[in-house]
Image (cartoon, rainbow, N blue to C red; front, side):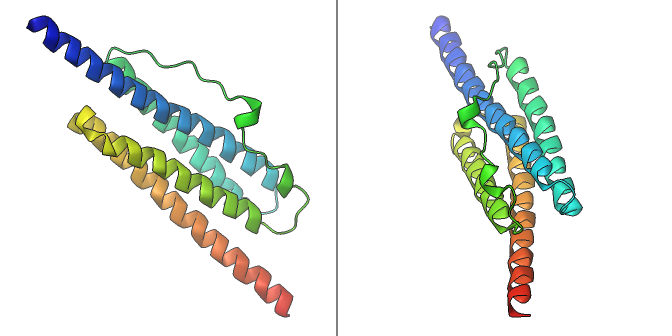
Amino acid sequence: MNNLKIREFDTIGEKQNSLLNHLIYVNHQRIAAYELAGEKLGGKNEMLRDLFYRMAKDSRVFRQELGRAVIQNQGEIASLFIEKNLQPDFSAFQGQRSQVPLLAFCKNFERNTLLHYDEAILKNELMDTPLRNLILAQREKIHRYLQIVENFLIAQKEKEKEKVLA
C-alpha cells in the first residue's frame, strides 16, 4: 500500500515536471523571439524595442522560477535548445516601413503563450498552491504584455492610416 502512494506521488511529480519543463521551453522560445524582434527593430522604435527586451528579460526570470520548481520537485530540467525551424522567422518584416506585421505576429505569439499557460492552469490538480500561484502570476504578466502589444498595434495602425489620409 505504501509503495502505491509513493508511486502515485512519483507519477504526479513526473507530470508536474513535464508541465513545468513545457513552460520552460515556451519561455525559452519567447526569449529568442523577443530578442530577435528587438534586433530587427533596431533604432526604428526604441520604446517598442525596449518593451521586447523587457519581455525577454521577464521570460528569463520565469524560466528560472519554473526551473527552481522542477528542482524542488526533485526533477530534472529538460535540456533546452531551439531548432532553427522553430525560431520565429522575421525575414518577412525586414525592410518594411510598417511595424504592423511585426506587432501582429507578436500579438499572436503572446496569445499562443497564454494558451500554454491556460493549459497548465487547467491541469491544476497536479499543482500545489505556491506552484499554481507562480504560474498564475506569470500568466498575468504575459497577459499585460499582450495588452501593451495590442495597444502598440492599434496606435501603429492609426498612425499609418493618418499618413495615408494626409
